[in-house]
Length: 320
Length: 315
Image (cartoon, rainbow over all chains, first blue to last red; front, side):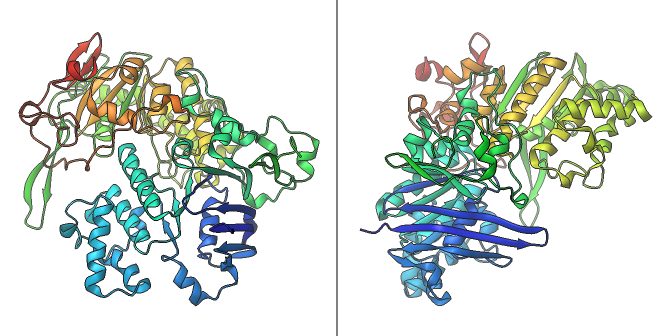
């Protein structure tokens, strides 16, 4: 039985004045219905561009150069734009990081939730309004009938994020992509938002791609994890395996550098150096410069992904 | 205490916004006090009050025994060397039109501490100490990454040999692997220069790592304060409990039962009666919590909390 979503060898490049930027460079993963995949990495690793590529929201100078994105077995990259418009917001939905800049500031929030319902599910205005009120209640917006006519600027960050979730889920998508949904929010609001996403995902048996740099959120909210570095996935496994048996030096470095892993006051373990500039286009493994376990092969060529134990994949010369 | 007078609504109804409301805090030399709390709790306003950037509406700020309000112009000017600040956003806290060497050395010039070659040497020394290289002297901020810009901000703060550094969310805008580097740098500098820190952050794991003592703020008031381990393991306030339970942990054993607080922060324009936290508190009881504001009291040695039921709930 095919997976709900299968991404194969996805490659997205940006042709800039300063050179060619390989933002996503051969990414593979699968997502089943009801499953949560965490896409983890630091700035510039390609996680957001991967998400935008899946939604086919890449604009020039960006271009999806190759690969397949199979939703229920159908390759989205081969579909005409009119078909993609039926997919976005309907079968695959997205929640963005900054709710204020992602909501339309001149439309009332009720309207924004209704938009998808009117467009994709072809409900009448009355039906759409009913359903929107219900959705706003489900995402925990108190007195939704009163807030329905509010503009986004009247709502707090947590509330706006809930409106985004309501909008994203209005058409009961098969896949939800959440791009750093709680980074801009306070920790107690973060807990509320994650709880809502989790509950609605279970209710609708959605697949969820959770993009984050917070490993604690990964630990508590995902089934599988893909760690990205310099446009590639460097480790991919069940979340428990990644956190408690990390294999790639970058994954190990990230986990070890967390304050929760070191006693207060003692120096944190660090990964030396900087997050890479993808324009540099160095041959070999992108992590080599910062790696404590580098060997001769690392500078020559980047290794292929290898399944080291069942379901646990690593891209590293230690295991090739 | 800092009350802002603000007008709301089209007809300008006059209201008070009590950003900081009756805060008592002390910080010893060489100590790091971690200040945690969510948006709108008043921690940034408190930082500015301590810096003397805004005047208090009531109460006082005293530095090394001298009240800020009582300082004459010269003393005030001297005070500016003693307390420095590191900001959250490494992108907007550096003047984009000044070279990095100039940014770091500016305060040295203003305070007449040194000039010319001596100043340049001192700036280079600072740059190297914070992990930059001397070639960076003539570069502009936009040429650097976030982590490097933050290092520039730290060098700038250190230039005048302050006693106290207020770090307002110094690492939250940085990537994970860079956060660890900057945290270690701040710890080293603290030891080396015997600095005191007021460390403001919303990431409680970072606060815990850096602080000797912790203060938790809610709606302009301190609701709990005490030693780091005491507050983290033996908290005495329901808000602290909820904040701590919200931290996502990698280790399943460390995870606590998550307390999901209902609702949003009340508007600081109309804070709740009685205990400010009662509207979201899972343990709030009538009539006490609804009507009587709990005072910040010493519940155990050096550990203060403002809750009517600390003993019943947590001991």
